[in-house]
Amino acid sequence: MAKIYTEKDADLSPLLGKKIAVLGYGSQGRAWALNLRDSGMNIIVGLERKGESWKRAEQDGIFPQLTEDAVREADVIIFLIPDMAQRTVYLEKVKPIMKSGVDLVFAHGFNIHYKLIEPPLTSDVYMIAPKGPGPTVREYYMRGGGVPALVAVHQDVSGSALKKALAIAKGIGATRAGVIETTFKEETETDLIGEQTVLVGGISELLRAAFTNLVELGYQPEVSYFEAINEMKMIVDLIYEKGITGMMTAVSDTAKYGGLTVGKKLIDDNVKRKMREAAQRVRDGSFANEWIEEYNKGMPTMKSMLEDLKNSKEEQVGAALRELALRGKPKS
Ligand code: NDP
Ligand code: MG
Ligand code: MG
Image (tube, rainbow, N blue to C red; front, side, top):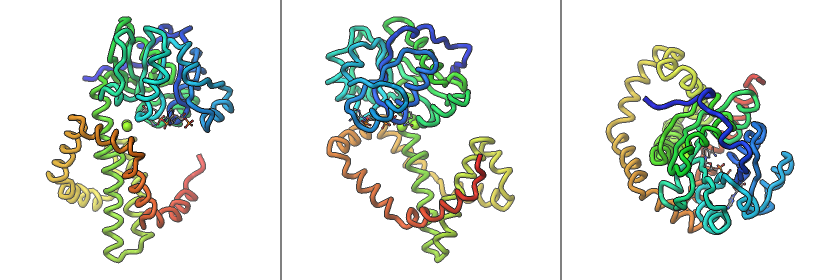
């Protein structure tokens, strides 16, 4: 059984009075900086350039500094810039400047697990990985709640790395929900396998294939879009709130019978074999190598695939129809 921590298990004190540098002010960076500040922690924000995030931070009443200046003062350094940018920033702006014995903190295990960052043996290294996007981390916190998170410790020099990870989890609101203990390996691998096989990859292509199938059979694209793509939200909301069995109770008996029997035929052993192959490429590091190479080339494959997606029939039809669906959504 997984170890789950809540409010009663966490205490801000191990980090009170410490200078916490949040590097990055994007999706997670903004949410963490504001939540930690509002929880009474001493944060500074470090940025590479006076760009969009710099302006945004100033509008929020946070006065950012250049990365190296924030790092110089910090007792704790939190990496909330894109995973692929972390190694360079670490090598050029963090490692040569940071005080000895600072804590290095991550929101995802990629750089540590795949050894892109090899931290000094004098640092505590730990992770708090929220299981939701940054804006939700901020919104839930402000409404008195929190997004659940995973915590993990990679290096524990002080003996209190887990306590400090829980302090940050509490500071961002995660312990108001629940925090599960994991390892950098488990978090990194499950995150990548999950986003590839289901959340980002599997689901998008399933919806697109379902749309194309209907359109090729001669059904109207608008009707096909509602059926194959748009209605997914209502089904997912039901699963989120009541589980798959609960969702089944909300659909018709005809949908239940057809779904249960045909679903099994679609997601067959062949699909499961391919999921296992994807997982294997994550576990043996070949996906990470492929992605690093793609990133270093300027992401040509990703850019061209995104362009194809944007120009696809389903996205064109969807743009107009989503407005209709949103118009019917109750205001709050
Ligand atoms: P973002 O893409 O939102 O980060 C953007 C921030 O990083 C901005 O402040 C941006 O500054 C800065 N930045 C962009 N490129 C660079 C660069 N090359 N060098 C230095 N700074 C740069 O990141 P996320 O919040 O999505 O991710 C941060 C971490 O959180 C990652 O480890 C990610 O895996 C993890 N995570 C993310 C989740 C999410 O939902 N987004 C969920 C859970 C974990 P500027 O505006 O100047 O470009
Ligand atoms: Mg994830
Ligand atoms: Mg991910």
